[in-house]
Amino acid sequence: NSDIAVHGNLPEDVVFEVRNWLNNEANLNAPGPSRIWGVFNDFMASNYDELRAKGFSKRDIMRLPIHELMRYIKSWVTSTP
Picture 1 (cartoon, helix red, strand yellow):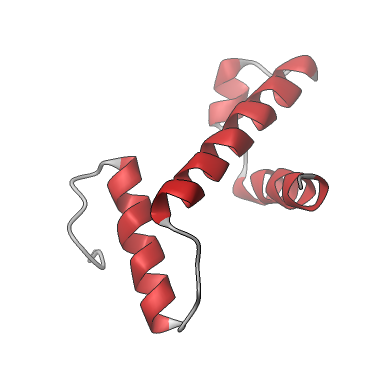
Picture 2 (cartoon, helix red, strand yellow):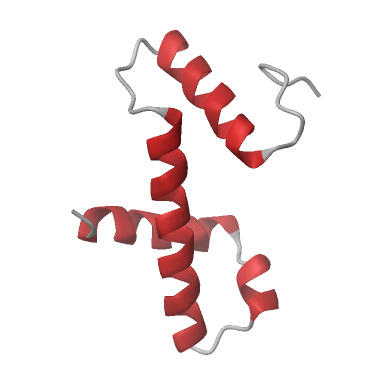
């Protein structure tokens, strides 16, 4: 396995490095890493609360299949200003 940059397994640093790599490689005009990290955390908190209200346990949420998580992300992105 090879990472695009050193990040020390720190989630905020991973976001920083991946954002910068994608921004450069795809010639994007991406928002800053801190904004991306903040929006990610907003989604995670909102999704956690919604899933708990639907009867999911903490463990269920941690083990959510990727395709289901992606569906929740898409729904959240389209409904959040």
